Length: 449
Ligand SMILES: *Cc1c(COP(=O)(O)O)cnc(C)c1O
Image (cartoon, rainbow, N blue to C red; front, side):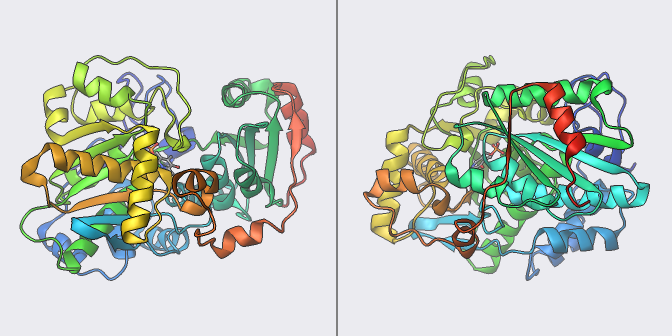
């Protein structure tokens, strides 16, 4: 089989190498990079994976063909640094399993992709001797994951732009408390202003500082998507090892916004990981469920919900999903059911799980559990079928929603990393959404490289 390269979902740009795809983020024709093929794992590799005692071995086997020219040893080192936290599978009543992908430094699954991409980019910078500035616009979780992932990495500086007054105080602390090579910029505007500013800055060569390369780190970067295959596989391996995977493969319920988590799970499945059926769980932003039922795509302005990281009205990874199914809606429907969950149902699910199991899910995970329950109700043949729900964030990130759901936030067990944050000082610069102002700021920024 030929080596994997990365064509664009828009079909006109030439296919790129992994390194180019990571550095560029977006293809020159505006499409997203996708792997040219997804080779199934060999039977003996698969057997070995099922015996693994951590996610590192599956990580190497799953990613090795995708990351040329990185060697197996380099990949191993990058994974060891990136995935330095546990990803346990927690068992609830009636065959619901929660894959807790939120034990990284910023307490959401986005740490996995951000930390892997940081490892890859740092290695590229080291080999080529470039000085890299990464600009990232954020509505909350992405910025903190990227900032933490690159903190103290040599040759890279990160500039995080976030909208004033539109992120939670905790999210702001997670970005502004670092210092060093991380520059936090509070923009007097909306998230769209931040994103527009990044795009303008990157497109206008006259704004670039001499001797520096520029890149962005938003969630469409292929280096963030690919490593997510690892934990989906690790969830199934743990299920199997726990003896809970009996006759049939499990269902998978995935709390979804931009659909990156769903696409990576489909990739893992294509490589041989057994999954019976996928449930795409969205909040009231039901663009994807509507698309699956109606067969027509209509982007919507996003509306605010209690699972804010999934408030997406135009899911960026839909192009990858369509490419994966070669625009065959029938096949997509066979593989995926999409379920939209209201805020009332999310809060009720959170409360029910807390009251009956003494387990406190975050609001995004609650959307995934609610969708799993509803799917099994609607399909009697699956009534007791094992479901793995991706638990995407730690409840401590959302105390106000927890309070709303169960009447108190005092039962949240706040991890040390958050306790710590409360004591750090916030360091940020406030700017209007103006590219020249950003240029001047970057010019005067003396972050230790
Ligand atoms: C980003 C995010 C999601 C949505 O993931 P997608 O890959 O964009 O579908 C769900 N939950 C949390 C906590 C997130 O931060």
